Image 1 (cartoon, rainbow, N blue to C red):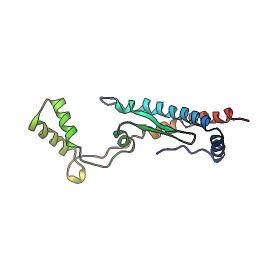
Image 2 (cartoon, rainbow, N blue to C red):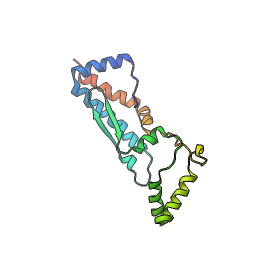
Image 3 (cartoon, one colour):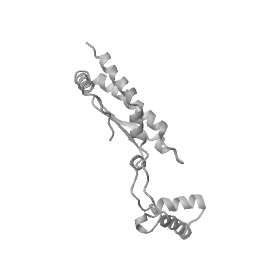
Image 4 (cartoon, rainbow, N blue to C red):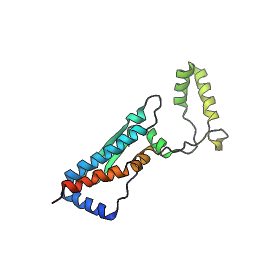
Amino acid sequence: MFSIKFDDKFLNSFNIAAKKYPHIAAKYLLKAALIVRNEVSRNSPVGVTANLKRGWFIKEYNANRAVIQNAYLHALFIELGTKAHWMPIDPLIQWVQRKLGLSGKEAYGAARAIQISKAPVSSGGGGQATKPNPILKTAVTDKEQEIYRTLEKVFVETWE
């Protein structure tokens, strides 16, 4: 989870406005979340399917927070990285069948050879950890000032 650190004065004022006018605070929090969602979508790596890029959505929002999520589990591993690990065999078999046109025992043997060649170093193979690519964290950081300006509009709209 990533959050933006606002100064105490801004945060206290926003919380007061959010309690008094939750629908207005929620509206601008949604706009801020859309800024981040659009930025992370724009900067997501594109593989064969572009699922990661298209998978970002705002799961929930209210006057106090907004949650941006990706529909695909691998987004977490791209964002945070992984330890060295064995590649799962079933996707490798499917890849070998599709790319190399092999089937049955030949497909399994080729997939197993790839799996062993990419095995974790601790297992004697040459596998590596996946380095983090913090696309969501970067989107939040890159758009922090725009988010701040968007949330400031709560004060304009709730000014008494």
